[in-house]
Amino acid sequence: MTVGFIGTGNMATAIVRGMIAGAFLPPDEIVVFDPNADKREELAHELGVRAAESNEALVAESDVVVLAVKPQILPLVLAPLAAQIADRRRVVVSIAAGTTLAKLESLLAVEGADGGAAPVVRVMPNVNAMIGAGMAAVCGNAAASNEDVAFVVAMFTAVGQAIELPESQFSTYTAIAGSSPAFAYLFIDSLARAAVAAGMGKDLATQIAAQTVLGSAKMVLESEKSPWDLIDMVCSPGGTTVAGLLALEDRGFLSTVAHGVAATIARDQEMTAGS
Ligand SMILES: NC(=O)C1=CN([C@@H]2O[C@H](COP(=O)(O)OP(=O)(O)OC[C@H]3O[C@@H](n4cnc5c(N)ncnc54)[C@H](OP(=O)(O)O)[C@@H]3O)[C@@H](O)[C@H]2O)C=CC1
Ligand SMILES: O=C(O)[C@@H]1CCC=N1
Image (cartoon, rainbow, N blue to C red; front, side, top):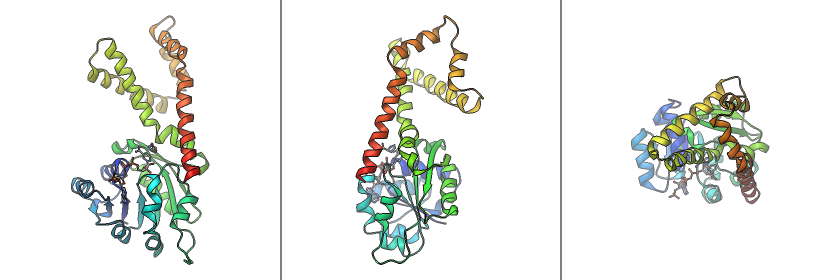
């Protein structure tokens, strides 16, 4: 089974690194291509995966083709590859934001081909896959078999967690899982910067804030308690936490986060409409 990655930028690199670390596939069953020869050779050298000389060469040797380029250039990338992808049953996996299965099917359609739509699996991963802590949503088109979808779920489970999700929820999912690592990084940096304002060194403050957010996330996942139950556990009557919590709410913390999520959903829907 050979998995080919078209594009070796932030996300593909994160996934490939995670796949190797998670021993999902032997390195020689992963092939990558990027027009930037340094990028692709560097990744190949570092991880022992194979570097193809072109997308065509990558498709020729791949059973699964992962599209890891920016959404806006997908038509450009797929136009010269559609016939080749269709010449034998290959599964196409797209991680492109705002790009529907229907759009991908149309980009992969081959005039006069009687094979019907190509098996396409859409994934919304996140960059935390790089350290095996990713969160991915997966959905397949009608031509994708249960085995195809299960393989992709397993691939992204090797780099974190993966769930099957109806495509109708992908915009919301993108906001709270695809993009939200950036929001979490911002929160951690904001905690640290506030500590710096109070005189603590930035690196130490960042380490403390990051570990505390990590532990808090694990508490939500592993304790039987809801986030609000956990908040109540921390808030001693008349203590420090409730003072901070009320100050955060005074500045609209909850509504600010909701506003950011809504903006992300709106942008994804805009991209979906335009794709
Ligand atoms: N970054 C993230 O956290 C997430 C990203 N995604 C999705 O993943 C996809 C990739 O995003 P990301 O990794 O951040 O983007 P990057 O720009 O980091 O990576 C895309 C790569 O594709 C390369 N590329 C450009 N043209 C071609 C081509 N014709 N053939 C092969 N490769 C090409 C680019 O090279 P060059 O730079 O030289 O143009 C670049 O290295 C996007 O669709 C995005 O929506 C999904 C979830 C999370
Ligand atoms: O910002 C983006 O469009 C991509 C998709 C989700 C995370 N990064």
